[in-house]
Image 1 (cartoon, one colour):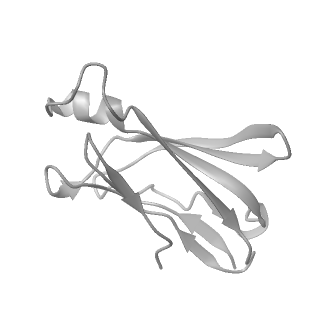
Image 2 (tube, helix red, strand yellow):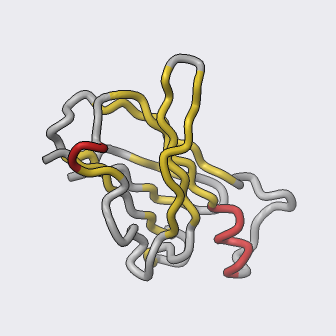
Image 3 (cartoon, one colour):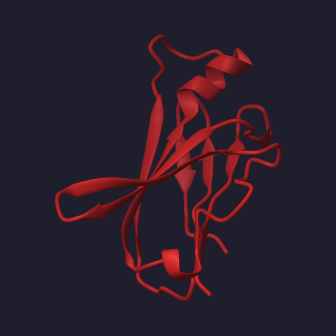
Length: 117
């Protein structure tokens, strides 16, 4: 059964990023439609997969992570306005029975992602 998951690591403070708001979009042609909104837990993960089973389909998706509000709430020094406020990660699911894990490693100045396992 295919699924999509994520987690966020705060590379400035060396810990999972708790409380980051995330929105998942599906892109269908010129249309960008919101699929769900969630928040990371104490482990920097979502409490459940973002998509699983029949809801998990091939296509192009975008995760938007609200990192600016997270670093502001922690009191982490950033630019004003923040250099990174929201981080969009666009990716394609080609294997509807695969596990797609899309983590975000983030600071107020940089981010990295990859297809994890």
